[in-house]
Length: 102
Image (cartoon, rainbow, N blue to C red; front, top):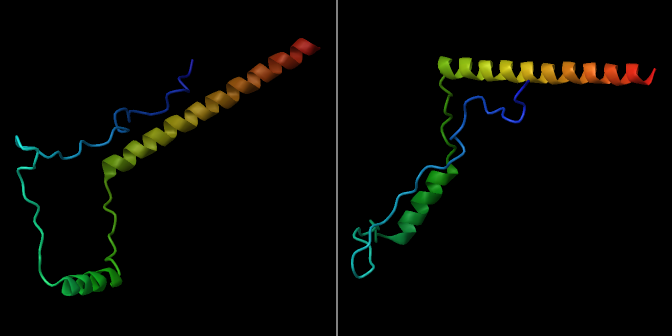
């Protein structure tokens, strides 16, 4: 038999998001940490943000990880085996039905 309903290939647990940071509150219900805001010239901050956003982002070249490539190859191979198994088993079922009709 083939476990076609579970084609995760070892990725169980990857569907859960990471825990978010939490704030600790004191007895008055306020946070213990003060946010770091810069109360400088807002126009200068806005202009610097516009300049930063108008420049193109530097291209990041993906790093090759041989272990990930091999893992992806293995997952793809297993998926193709499952697809081939489904196709072959369906063909044999179709032939049996055909021969039952004769």
